[in-house]
Length: 75
Image (cartoon, rainbow, N blue to C red; front, top):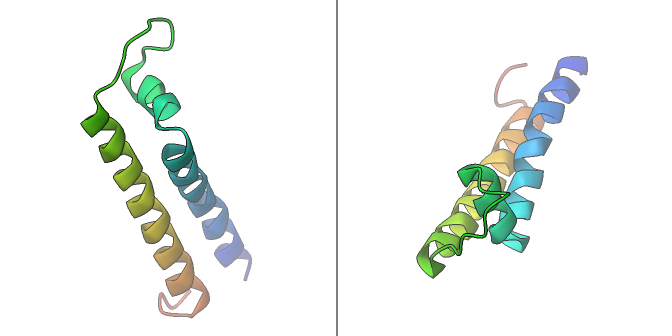
């Protein structure tokens, strides 16, 4: 059970980053581009892409947690 909790601790930041990407894509844009000092306006399509990747990140991490705790991995 301890290794399941350890794996869950490594998966939870993926879920939180997905939530940050959905709620505030401008922050995610500045973090990934490294432009926290400059004022750079992202394209609307790029912000939509960040939100979609956040949704995919949440779904994938939730799937990993489901597989882990339903004993599909065999851990």
